[in-house]
Amino acid sequence: MNIYPLLEGTYNVSSQKEFTYLTNDFLPKEGINMNVCPFLIETDDDLILIDCGFGAIKDNKTFLISKLNSYGFSENDVSIILISHLHKDHINGLGKIHNNEFECYFPNAKIFIQEREMDFALKQETFNYDTTFLKQIKDYKNIVYLNKNKDRINDVITYEVVGGHVPFQQVFWFEEDCKIAFFGADNLPQLNYLKYQAAFKNDLDGIKAMNDRIEWHKKAQLENWTILFYHGKNTFENFLKITRSFKKHTLIRNRMIQF
Image 1 (tube, helix red, strand yellow):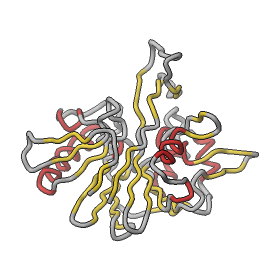
Image 2 (spheres, helix red, strand yellow):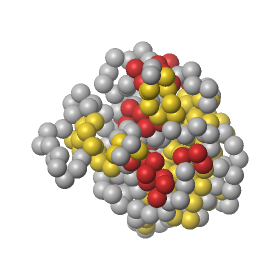
Image 3 (tube, helix red, strand yellow):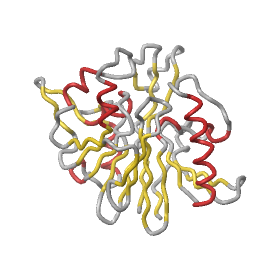
Image 4 (cartoon, helix red, strand yellow):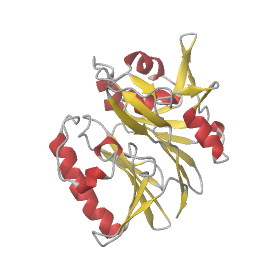
């Protein structure tokens, strides 16, 4: 199993959740800056994309697809897409709306979305969700709606609905050849979230998210998980290899790793 970080880049996020791609020519003083890093996992049978980023474009191509191409893959090679939740920085890079129709950037992929998350998102009036985009994609033919609290998608992938950040957020485990990788989505978006036992105000249920992190950390040490961080605070904080010793974390730099 090979894991590739697809660092889309750094965005400035305003109080109204407007995302602006940061460049040397645009360095705002207001808002917060946030990295967005989907992941690509190559297994014996599939090429799996975990979340899709916001979808910023340069030269008629998204930064996500350019990053994927840099590893030698085409968007047509992606066979599975896993969506943790439907905030726009996790889903809007899936495709574009053209002539009032949705065009998916990954035409050969099955897209796994939690059905209750879609139902919830379409009822929201917050800036976190792009409901116009979601209404366009909800009936797309390649979407597979998940409706269990925990289940296996195939022999490699397990998902679980954990809530926390949003009510129906799901997280994913990947297991092949006795190796385990874990994606905790926005309940575990950065390394610092493991260091401090705290409830964060940007989560709908911060206590639940905090308690989940404590349990995941224990299991990660026992089972030597590799943890994938979607919003790592710097460009090198994409992976964390957890060993059984609490103090012996190995940060794996911004590169592909092979199990």
